[in-house]
Length: 66
Image (cartoon, rainbow, N blue to C red; front, top):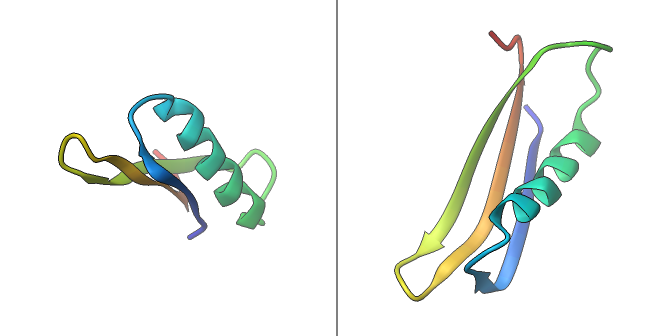
């Protein structure tokens, strides 16, 4: 299962979808599946309490999406 990561230092307080996009691009660069294969994408993050923010964006891809 390809897993993409994007770390922010200092932790992010905005632009979250942009940062998930960077993590998705990392995951897709690791994926070597079939053309037109349906994938399930799971978004997760590592955060610290306010005013900390999001330290890392994580995207997991799994084949056989529903």
